[in-house]
Image (cartoon, rainbow, N blue to C red):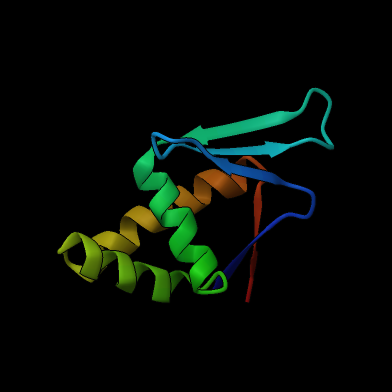
Length: 91
């Protein structure tokens, strides 16, 4: 599965590593903010063109954890983003 941001998002990362995702086309603008772990997951997904499995493998190696654990955490986080309307899944 690949995960892609919906069109029109504004993405930022502050100096403390917090990801700020804004959907300006909604009124009021919808905002999603997460900590450094979520930021790392977002960057891993973008670096792997939305490939969840590849992003999870990279994160597992970086975090020295079991790939299944990294994948489970990433899957939960992606579902939160999908529920918020910020990303869409593609087969």
